[in-house]
Length: 251
Length: 260
Ligand SMILES: Nc1ncnc2c1ncn2[C@@H]1O[C@H](COP(=O)(O)OP(=O)(O)OP(=O)(O)O)[C@@H](O)[C@H]1O
Ligand SMILES: [Mg+2]
Image 1 (cartoon, chains in turn purple, brown):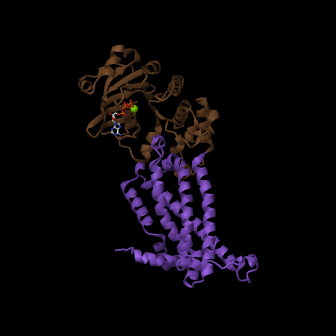
Image 2 (tube, each protein chain N blue to C red):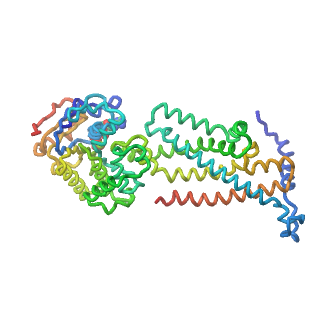
Image 3 (cartoon, rainbow over the protein chains, first blue to last red):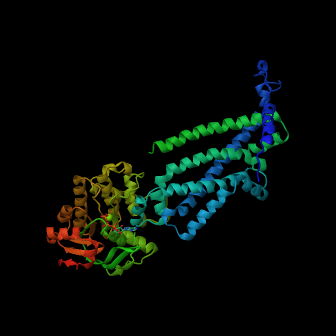
């Protein structure tokens, strides 16, 4: 049983504030733009900006790759999983149960297993996020397919098209903008996931963040978190624009 | 010759098509009439095998096509092109690609999935569009066309299937009178020019009379009229459309011999 005791809550809350106070940098106005050697300057706060930027870039790449792989797998499984396309009973059950399993297990658990199998590094992180992504996107994709209507499907089937051909030509063009938009949304989520997957050895900026938190390098914590925030916000903004373009104005 | 023997389809307790016997000779333009719910769509969908028959047989040139599976079934479907009331195009694909979908079964699987259509197929699709006077629309999205234009795209798709039979399920029910006439003319023209038998479900008795050489009437799934348009008197039409399910079951099919 989990408990939320008011007393514990009351005692703990100030400490949260205290932690934030600790990780905030001590910046001094007069030397704000001085070199990294000067205490209290921005450059000193972000004194390892070059390696952090590289790690962030790696993290974004991990998220992109994982989203791509996960979306690919989701696409392949969504067609048999959709209820309206009449895939065989066995194929449908396999696809649905498979997707369910992949999205029920959190990325971090996949990562723990994969780090054990493949060793510490981005490969384990990418695969872990891709697996979970396949599960969640597969369900969304299947639902989009189920909402696509049967007219075009009947048209292609009645003309002698095979099941795969009907999926490719009657369904895919109809749902593609939706699926792309879901995948982009997932990319935003995966960027956050990729930022912490390093806590368990999955590569990216998370490893660095874990180290500075564990070692109580307070100012570096705030610097890294701020960088992650900026990066996530920038990509959110971009992908949101793209998504609205996709859904709003179909070509 | 297309022959139906005791063709039946049940949905639960209801019988949508009830032991229909029908012979359609080569080159015939056949209109199928009857009230809403009489079983017209179910009958055509069974011939194309979009709907599975519960009983009875479908023979084409003596070959039983009732139980075909896999590649043989797809071959049969390509051979009896279907045209729908709602056109059933892929709205987001362009017109030419929609027509090319009629060629899917003529291509090896890997090639068709890539969407790299052979030049000969493109030329064929374009000439089908030309024949229907809509070649100028080839690059447009199918979903952006008017109903009459979409139905002509669907007919072009049927043509490139190089079909032995054309099935048209209420092809003009969603169209205004002018477009309805255009589409029925196009079907009749294909029927005459290539000698392809056309089975067309149709609500409008006027269009049925003017475009078909033979009419069959369905009521509650049973075939209750069969004859040339002249034989469909006011009296016969009233009987066909007024007939209730119970009466239809009791009524003996009124048959007027047709020259086949
Ligand atoms: N998939 C289905 N499931 C259950 N009942 C069905 C199904 N399809 C058709 N029916 C029933 O079968 C009967 C015949 O339907 P059908 O669509 O063939 O009639 P129709 O003559 O084409 O009518 P309309 O002129 O309205 O198109 C109707 O009573 C209908 O409710
Ligand atoms: Mg109908």
